[in-house]
Image (cartoon, rainbow, N blue to C red; front, side, top):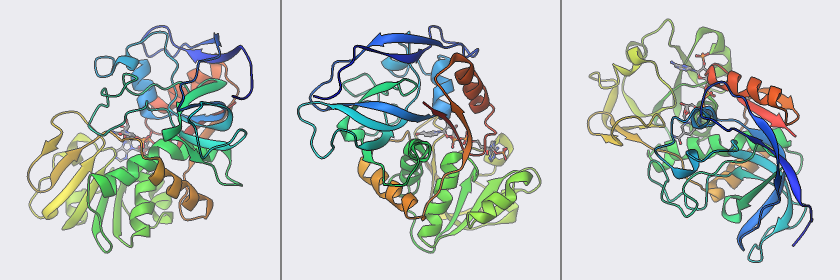
Length: 336
Ligand SMILES: NC(=O)c1ccc[n+]([C@@H]2O[C@H](COP(=O)([O-])OP(=O)(O)OC[C@H]3O[C@@H](n4cnc5c(N)ncnc54)[C@H](OP(=O)(O)O)[C@@H]3O)[C@@H](O)[C@H]2O)c1
């Protein structure tokens, strides 16, 4: 039960392409399943997967990515306005955040195994229907922009270090792509574990990486495999071809090291030194709640690259175009 209204506005893409022409459509208020809530969206953050799905690149991997019209946006924050009958532990008016990634998210690389046909999206809208299992409570004082921005990248970074890797205190760790949104969080999580962290970045972002507590390796001027050796573990969020060609160089990683990676092309695992383990993040609201609370306590932060205000076709086109550059320092966020 909760607020009653019959329609709302949502962004829709009607064709898979990279022109990022969205319609702002008026749609009927959705029916909730027992374990769903309806959230009035205050902020939605983009991830690279948004422009990838909009371009139709993933349409063979999960059914929801093939459907048209499609409403993009996975990360959301906002206020609960309606609850399904089985929803417990959350109340009307509560500020929540999370990722609308479907109900299953059982792990595995592509998640086409859940009852909704895989990641659903839909946060670029005035309202979004989400399963309660994806919800996290936004601590008092945290902005909607920050809450939305943390949602996917925190879960991804956490899993890259601790679920698909086994990073422990004192490890010498390399993060490829230390300034990606995921990489920023990964550096901080590893530093909070008292690891010795190195991170690749370009020249202009060296100070940013230092401020996060990592030793920067400028990928435009240095060869990471010569700058440092003997890593206990690595996490790859992005990497150029010439850097990737040296991952298995003698001495770069210690025997038994794992390189977890969110770049998922090719086989899921590759044996050797390091052993490469590729993954797609899965829903883990418990871990996300801890990280959101840590962010509120000042132990974790996410850079916001740019915010746009208002659900308009012009704003969406700009946001998606910016996201696709892969040069943003931090998250691109829409405030509704
Ligand atoms: N598998 C999963 O579950 C999962 C989840 C989330 C994201 N992802 C993927 O992970 C990647 C990162 O996502 P994101 O949202 O964190 O990215 P992002 O924030 O959009 O990344 C932008 C940053 O990447 C840096 N960068 C670009 N090329 C680089 C290179 N060769 N070496 C080091 N840094 C480089 C840029 O810095 P410079 O300007 O200095 O180059 C920029 O700061 C994307 O490919 C995304 O699709 C996968």
